[in-house]
Length: 305
Image (cartoon, rainbow, N blue to C red; front, side, top):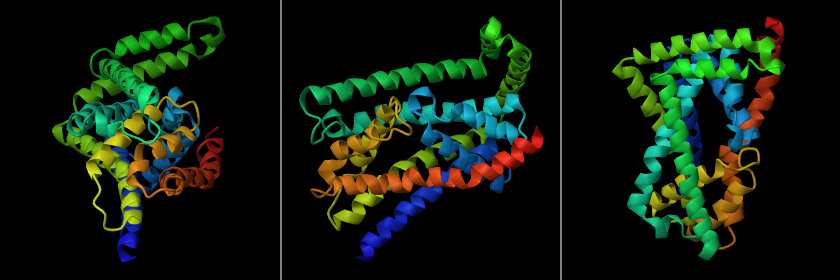
């Protein structure tokens, strides 16, 4: 129907908003050193590396720093920008997780076809355990970026002072110095810098989670749906998937989708909608990376050696 078509179009629109917001954020954080085209390339390669790397080891964090540095942003600022980006993502999760829990409640957020009893309790405790680990890590990052970047430099120098890594020590010292400079630079940023960065972060994550709402609406006709509960369940899913040992949370993401959201989907359609969800929010970045990466490596890596 035209309503189904409209909701599928809205799902695609959510994907576009998600990526545009990320592009805007990377431009703001680099003081517009990247134009829109280069921002698109950075975000696509970053998303591709995140899709291929398990979240439990940081996803595409380190590759993102490499990408940005090869795009002409000095190493210290690259570390600062990617670390600060990760910190902003953490702010979103730190704010939204308790908010949706408080508004929607435990019974609605953790209801599911196969998540009753001990297994449901396991997911509940896993969610809060991962949440507080993330919160502690983000507070550590905030300390490193805004309070004492010298600690990070000294820690890196100590790690790279062991015999096996000592040949990289000089580069690490330089990186630490650049990180300190970038940290000092962050402290001088004005309100517009912070406002745009936080706005882009929340816009991107909201668009990311809106994809599922749109897909479910497309296949549920005119039936009323508790959109905030569906949104809140995705916040829970997003946090639990972070500990997945598989690339991009593959496998676990689909299983959780079926369990957490199956109650809002017509019987038998959940696996199909889970695949459609990943088709829109996961596989396009792998394809984009496969197309962009060879040319980018040839131009930005080999030509600069």
